[in-house]
Image (cartoon, rainbow, N blue to C red; front, side, top):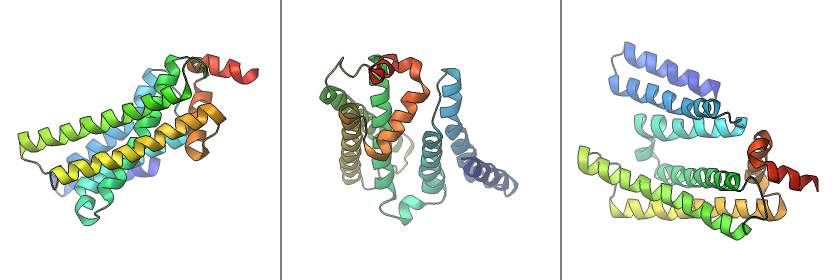
Length: 207
């Protein structure tokens, strides 16, 4: 994280010296966005696992700085698809943690399948809203965020669906088996660091 933040700061400063204003804007904008999760976590008294912070920082760096500023979207045909898929998994897992928090970590308050379905819906909704955002930006400011138009949008939505399904399955397996591989360990780590929000989950583990 610190290395990426330092690279973004350095890139922004160099761009200012060279009067490359778009690159400077993207560099500082990416840096600002990557600092949003830890700032919000501090404001809301949340404890974020280091892997989560690293993943969000890397995502912003890959999507905005590498993707837009350095043209990775045009250079690598799979770059956009990979980012859509990974973001769907991330938003799905965040959605699961939020819904599970509403039940105070009670594994028996709702069927695991119901929580998994909500997880899928959250990730798909965010992905669909992003596609609407891309369409509005293209229509309003003449950008080319949709690339090939309908084909790009539908491809993104299908990849988003796959990522949402992975997040949904991860949440389901975590509830049923209390384990779901690497992603499941991430869920467990977040819940452990924020026990006060998942009190019933902690109590059930003691039984």
